[in-house]
Length: 92
Length: 92
Image (cartoon, rainbow over all chains, first blue to last red):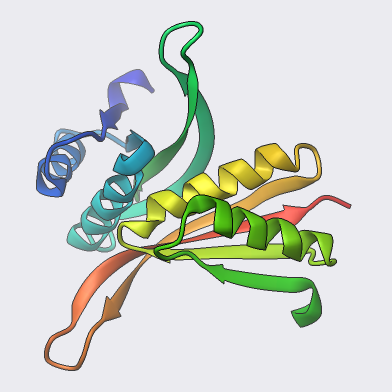
């Protein structure tokens, strides 16, 4: 499982960078690519997932979308941010 | 079904406005509240869902999260934006 699964953390780069990373992982044989993002990067994760899905039309599905809350920051200065995890899966 | 289901479109207002709208709908008897957002408002929809879930801890679940692409704009000037739909459901 580990060898055929990759995780991409969505941050400050443009959507195209993450799309390229995901498509590359699928091309190199990954069965699943998991996109993770927090806070304002969440919209970018959704954009990335949709662009990959449309680009690899018929080959990649959005398997699942999970949203959660995460605590970040140092002890005493913690704050809660929303997070998203989008699981893209290659069809057999 | 119609009477016990509400939809909230997430836009430019602060997260607290949408949280209040969702909590109010549940309080008035809705079984489901659907949050919809496009583009950069997607992050706000996820924030809203997480705040409602934590605020109504044990009473409201995130039932499902769907992401899609939508065409917007006038004919000839259409563009594609990502969209999210988050279904919050009250536990029985």
